[in-house]
Image 1 (cartoon, one colour):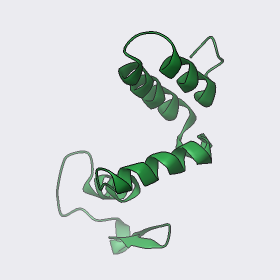
Image 2: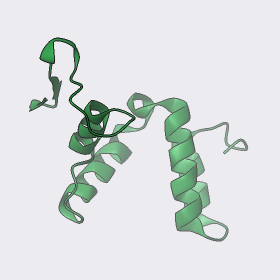
Image 3: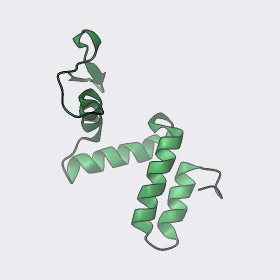
Length: 96
């Protein structure tokens, strides 16, 4: 990752194509680089591919899951709601 100046696409491509334990190493590097750069700065093509693949194969909507986890809070389920009972609207979906 450092060799490629923390470039997300080049780093993941390099790790996936060379070395050992490519799937695990790629997942860890992707998590680190994703946290470093932030979701908004990752390549749209790759983000959309991951989102659509997860919706089709395991049947998980990663965006909805992230919103539910955010609303749930760090301490697990509770009655805590966003201030004023506000909802999150993400890609024309409403989550409360």
